[in-house]
Image (cartoon, rainbow, N blue to C red; front, side, top):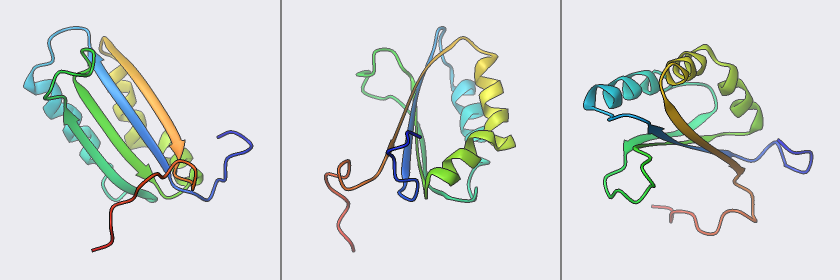
Length: 116
């Protein structure tokens, strides 16, 4: 986190994955299995994972969307054994990966879902 970032605001963490070979259903199933183990991780507010279905992602086949309560929760996630196991699995394969993180502060939140 940069020094100017308020560490108390939620953090969104987005990741795109592009396997340099055909990504069959077994790849998606294993990724989903490993990621689903994160459910209940302290500070993890949202967790979504899916395959690109519209082929508009420059060949990136999978996307991961997470939201953390705050910067401390995000930092804990980065070093958590379950995340490190997934990261090791990814690094053992020829994936291209794009990571993008940002705080959900007043400047970055342009519209939230209406309260129901």
